[in-house]
Length: 283
Length: 354
Image (cartoon, rainbow over all chains, first blue to last red; front, top):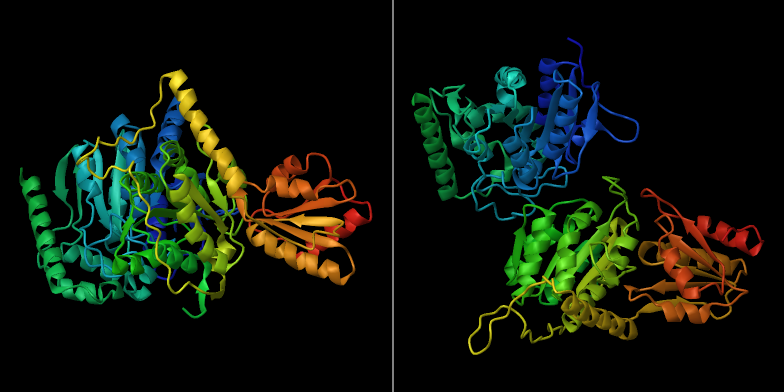
C-alpha cells in the first residue's frame, strides 16, 4: 500500500501520534480528507506550501475541528460525494476541553465523519500544560505538584449522547486500532476513536518505551480497549492478568512525585471501570 | 529587592503577584506559556488562586465572574486566544469590571505563526469585541516595564473600573533583562461597593450588561464614553527623545520602539537629525503630544511589526501637518535598525512615499 504520510516528519522520537496518523491512512486510503487543529498533529498538515499529507487536508482552529468536519461533511453530501472519509486528528486538549462543544454538536446532528483523538494526556505542543484528560498525580507545568482531579471520560459522554460508533484504542495495539478505523468508516454517521498515545518528552519517558507504556496502560486496566456500536459495548481486549501499575508509573518521570493514595485511587478507578465495562458487555 | 535577571513574561507575572493578584485564569497558547507556568508555580504558595480553564472563552468569563465578585484578577493569552476572548472583554468593559488582560502578540491573521508581531494593535485599541467600548492599553518596551506597567495596570483597572490590556509580544515576553521590584510594595486597598460580596446591610448588587430600552442604553453608554474622555485627559503616557531639532521623528511602541531607538542612534552618528516618540499608553493615545510636534518640514515614520496600523493613529494626530511614512516588517519578522535608517535616508533625500 502506498504511504500516504510523508517520511521525515518533524514529530519527536517515539511519537505515538505519528503512528496513529499513518495507520489511519493505511486503512482509509486516498479517498480521505484529513483535518488537524493547532497541535502536534498540525505538523502533518504543514505550513506555507508544504504538507506531510498525500491527501487533501484542512488546518482548523483549536476549538472547532468538529465544526469544520460538520461543514465539510454536509458540503460533500450536497455534492453527492458520500464516499469520501472526513477525518479529524486532534489531541486531548482540543477534544475534551476546548473542542467539546463543536464535537457534541456534530455528533448530535449526526454528520458522517471520523474523529480520532490522540490522547497524550496534556497540552504538549505548547509545553506540557494539564488538560481535562491529564490523570491524577501527573506532573505538568501547570500542575507542578501533580494533578488532583481525575481524567475526564469523554467516551462515556459520547455514549450518553447516543453516538453510533465509539471506541478506545492504543498505539500499543495498533492492529486493534486499524480494525476500529475500518469499522468507523462503515458507520453512516459520526464515529469517535479515543486513542492512547504516549508522548516521551511530555511524559518524561524514554522514546523506546512508547509502545511498552501504551501496552501497559491497557494491561493495567488504566486504559481499557473497547468499542460500542449503537451503544452495545464490547471489550476488544480482555485483560487476563492485570499488569503492575507501579511498573507503568515508573517508566514515566511525570509520575515521579505521585502519592501512594493517588496510585491507589488510579488502581481502584481502573478496576471499577473495567468491571463496569464487562458488566455492560454482558447485558 | 536587588536587581534580578528575568524573562519578560516572568517579570510581568511576579509584578502581578506583588500587586495583590488574587486569581489568575489561564489557557495554553504559545508564546505566553511562561505566564500561566509562573502563576501555577508561585501564585498558590502566595495566597492566590491559579486555575487553568477549558478554553480562552471560559478563562475570560471566569475573569468576569471573579472581577464582579471583587477580586484582583488577570488572564493572559496570545493573539488567536485573545480573539476568542473578545466577547467576554466587551461584556467586562460594559459591566465596568476591573481586570488585567495580557496579550503576548504573535503573527496573524488566522493561525499565523508564533513569532512576535504587533498585528493586534487595531484589535486592542479600537475595540476588538462588539459595541462602543475602550480598553486602557499599555505597551511595555523592556522587561522592567513588563513589571512596572503590570503594577500600573491593576491600579488603573481599579481606578477606572475598566479592563486594562498589556500589549506585549514574544520578544518582550521571552527576552531576559535585569529587573527590580520595589521593596515595600503594598497592594492598594480599593473599596468595591458594587461587587457581589453578599448583601448584608445593603441592597444586593447585580452585575448585568443587558440594556434593551434605547433611551436608557444611550444614557448609560454616554456615561461610559464620558469615562473614556476623562481617561484620555488623565492617563496618557509617552516618552520622547531628540524630538526638538528632529527632521524625522520615529514613532513606535514595544519591540519596534527598541528598533527605532537603535535606528535613531545610528542616524545621529551620521549627523542626521532623528528623534523618537514612544507611546506607552496606546489607549489613551498621546494624540495631543504628537500633534504638538507636527510641522510641515518634519516627517514622521512609524516603525511597526504590523501592516500600517499605528500609522493611522499617528496620521490622525498630526492631521496633515506632517507627512507620515511607514517602515515595517510582517509575519513575525522584526525590522532592523538598518531597515529603518535606510527609510530615513530615503525620506531626507526625497525618495520616500508617504
